[in-house]
Image (cartoon, rainbow, N blue to C red; front, top):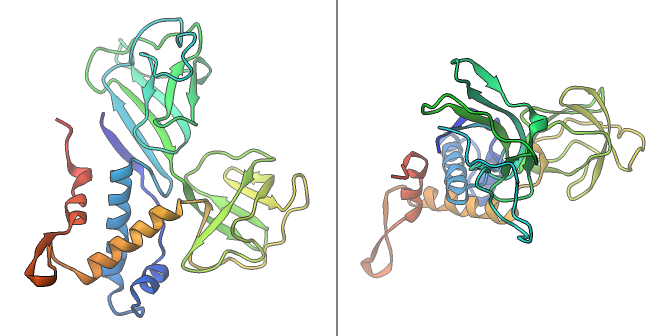
Length: 283
């Protein structure tokens, strides 16, 4: 099914400083090339795993709603993919923003979110009508249904040390009491925020802007600096980040499609072919 990027990631999971440290290169020598290499490695990792590293808004297009029936899942099966389930092709999904379709009269309609349920814990993410409901009948033509959703392990944040707030762009809406973790690449988190630490949302002065506390219902943390490098809410798996570093190192040392190994043996660098994965077709 066609998957279109609506809002691309606004930061890379690996800051230039961290990439340069890994390949042991000084800043200013080949920054543009290394920056492009980080992006290429990130896209390759995402295409190979179907996992979104930094938050991105997608639109998944379907020709019709899947399946029929009012009776939901089959009793006695602990996990299943119902015939009427929409499966989203990127994980982890943070929020399904809307499901729209072209109605029989040619107008665009929005499916009432109270008539469907989303299983964010499954991979792929499943969407089905709630019990007793069915999907609406769209116009019988290609591309008549589309789902807009946000996927990603983490999202960039901007800190206002004066207001003690954390602003998040493309991400789900957080509720008071939600527990979050912050991460950083290529610098340091805003002081006094720490890595591998649970923080609690205690206020939301405006949409996408939050104050955090060290305890549930506690006082908002007094943030004293804006931090350096790339700051994120959420945690990107460390093993994926290490894979990206290895790919960056390979592309920095071997800047061609093939590499001559010991004793004259020539082997293709499989990562090069991976750069084309997102342009492939399934048929």
